[in-house]
Length: 163
Image (cartoon, rainbow, N blue to C red; front, top):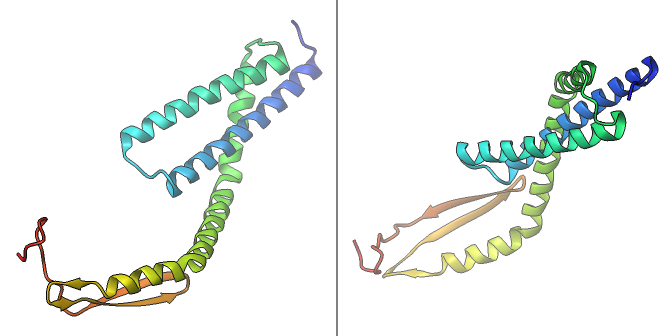
């Protein structure tokens, strides 16, 4: 179907917006991977491939909705322009903001669950290793838990015998 000049301009702007939205989704994917899924290069490459296949399907579905599936050069230029503008203008700010927000949420969880962690450490500190005790000094500062081990721990092999 042939679109008018106005229809082509609207399609170009819609594809630019789709490119920016896809850039935002990719940033969220990178942040989630950095916070929760940090793993090796092979797994990262597989995740990226899955993301881009899903993104391609999403873009073509969007393209069918806006342009009846017609592939034109201005559509790809709009998509690339939207993604590039997003990455140049907003990506750094959004990534820093979301990472700072996740760090604050993590700090709140540490403060909430630190009594349970401290209780577990208190029990652990009183466990007997052979004839000697290991003392663990625990401090919570700024939402982080610091441990200092005092005394001499007895080194044991996997069967429990002194090494």
